[in-house]
Length: 558
Image (cartoon, rainbow, N blue to C red; front, side, top):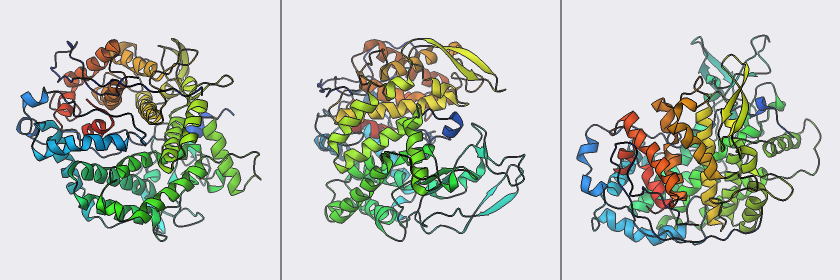
């Protein structure tokens, strides 16, 4: 396994945009440890968690004048190799031990002893978001207490007020299925029916999903802020927020998702397997939390660390419950059993999100042996079963059936590496991007466990890289994208959603020159389609105007 590096190869790009280059070094080897009920599609309909930039509320377009005022061409062309990422036991998306190795270099940059304007720009951008969002002055908050009612505007513009859904506790997390609507032919509208891709405004009216997303964003911002500036105020506020959301008996969220993605009139008021996707943002919370390690605030609050580990151990246990037989129908355990059965039979991004979570939580609480076992038995193929990758990615070019906008079934040709379950959706590019992001993050997580998923290929020829190559093929040959009537991949709004996945992929296979050339062609096309001054462009990213360059810099060396 080569050094997990994000960067541009020093090569001639297909497109004319002159993007900066990076020096790559520091190869390392990973050991690969051993090998490793069909569900009705309507049961898996859900509006996915926001894309990487959406769920972090990133303001994409740079402020007027920032491109010219805060960057220097000589600096943006400099190499970005700010230290070697060590192969040490770590957690989540990146290794904390490795972060400490790089910390001195990062701090030297920020103190002015090293000329890396792009990094400074990104940190300043991050600090401005923390200030604009008033995170340091936020009053700590949790899931409870809940309002007695929730209200929303229906399609006619009328304001509808409904009583809050009843659960076992006010500390329970609650959300409604996003694409499910009242049945127009039923007087009471129950049970709700699915309209894939069309968001019911009622689903956004219950506050819990927003509150969960907010705490995860806040902790990631504060973790990044503390790590790059070493200002204790960031760590102190992070602990205040964490205590309220996870540990305070009055305001805390209970460690389960029993009531996530509820379909009104179904499942006895309980949630479904798709509800596990709601929890995906907790993985970025843990990424942010580990950046607080070494702070005076966290060192003095060992009870918070212990309490947070207890909370995630409870959630992990609930999410990995293995029922030997079906509980009595209609009981709470029965609906939990149904959720577990549904997720085990899912072959799309919902399962990827689930695996990313349970593996992340297991690493956080120290269940290292379980992590290795899960990757080898569930993510990979075994002698007796296909794994997650084989169930999602086509090993060879072929044809799949999809529905057009009128609902008629048709066959479409797809290349090797295509993801049929994502292409069948009414937002195919969006769902392909989400699954790519999950798979790439699983690759990083497996790497921290000493397993090389980057270069793992199933007996039939399926791999994460092949899925990346399929999207790159469509990006380079947009007329062959088979789902244009739903999402045109050449539409800049659609094309750009793959950019962070491609940057991650660039770091995963730095010595694959053909893949790197394709990735750089994709990124160069961003500048051509959007303009170099766009907040989505590769130029802006390299200049530090996209603060997520800090996230990538932590996980990789480039």
